[in-house]
Image (cartoon, rainbow, N blue to C red):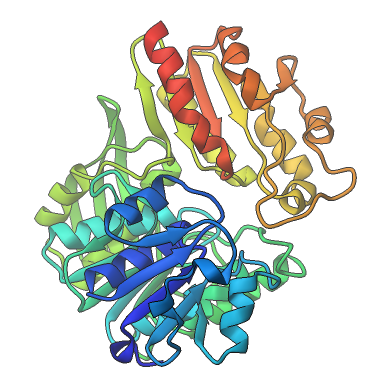
Length: 450
């Protein structure tokens, strides 16, 4: 695949967060871009505002004819697209240059100095912190993010093409298409068991990813993971760590320990030890890249976060509404730790939408344990994403496992009324499905009330 010879790029599933980042990249580099997605969204609207033609019906007749020339058109698709998709079938059977998103991303990064972030949790936040640090420090970087950065209101940072920062996604083993110079692994908890046979297969894939690092490249790992590499952690004996951690005015203040010494009084605005851990590995990779510590400290202090990652929607003395993408039990535990650390005396209502029937089945007991920590729980129906229902796996079945006196099945149509019946001062919406579409309605209802 020679990207320089490609003039047109057609995306099947263009509204996905990773796909849309690639689409933005190609628009910025002067390519003609078009695509299909199942439903309109804020992401597709933003692309349309850039001049990208998008349609929402799977039919060849809707494709702009100029993208039907196989000699200069690249077709990119997401693995979430079913094999029965008629447009994908057409392109594959008619000799077009058709590749998964991960393959195209690997090709883009091949000629750059690539910094890759892997792990079952923390990829998006870590990648966005790292991209922001390098951008502020003046590196000629393009960063592909798995979420919308609050600093740039975009899922791609465009500040040059010599350096790339990417999420290394373990789903479908996509990260094995990358050849990074620097890479990190934040966690290797079991997930995506619809793809992997068991947890040991997932761990093996991370070890295979470590083998993809270029000769003379470096691997950074969270302290305690069963891999050899440069370690990072919080107040421990890691090569890089946050020491003397304090909370001042809702922010973490800490000293940054490196193999070469200690730099004092770094500030970080995101709550939660998991987020502080993400900041440390981003700092470690930026330090190894060569960014001066005084610039890194200023850059980190200016970092605002990623939308739907512990994002404050309402924040007053009497009422707080936070939205988070957490969709795995360990991620819910991290959100719980963060909210209890910041609001130790207040009641917390969690509104959770499970994501995938298979994930709900595979981690039902772990989900129940994590959700039982909150004072109150509203549980929405399972968001199916790419899956068909699994018999017996329902939100009602999951709710029965939750050990809480204040729990209830909820529907989107009655969600605001159910929230109003709660006396909780902290409201959390949690999940990776379309629960994010409800945030604006909840915010509107309670901004008026508070």
